[in-house]
Image 1 (tube, rainbow, N blue to C red):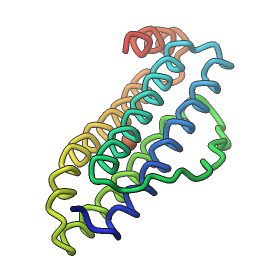
Image 2 (cartoon, rainbow, N blue to C red):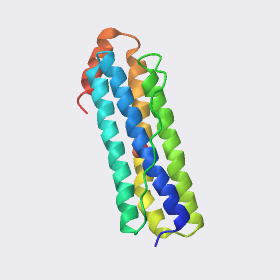
Image 3 (cartoon, helix red, strand yellow):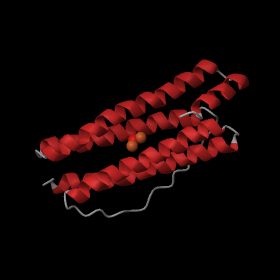
Image 4 (cartoon, helix red, strand yellow):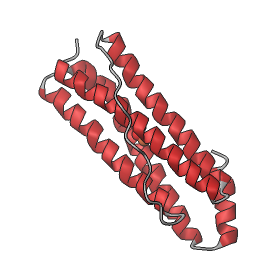
Length: 161
Ligand code: FEO
């Protein structure tokens, strides 16, 4: 059995994961408008991963006989000033999600909910990768600078995800 207070945090995490997907879809729409289909594709894929994260938690809760109630997803639209802005926002967002996962893990440890401690190990590793990928995108973007032809090539690369 998982602990009630931990289950409640996991239900909230489902909402955060769905919101992450919503946010990345907004980034994708931004890049579509800028005629960068590769950047857009990268974020559409990322949005799909976020949906999978939400489903993973949903499945775990249902297996534990916990009720999963959904709530409204926050508006994802953010002010995106330039081509680099979504990349920076993306890293900031992943750091926020990592902190949220860590908070649930710490609560699970505190109340000796070993089942959830074990379940969350996958998410701890995944968040490490998500932050690394977000940082990598920023590094690549900074490497190419403002050069149009280099951004075109980077767009091709990101389109291959
Ligand atoms: Fe599901 Fe990008 O964290």
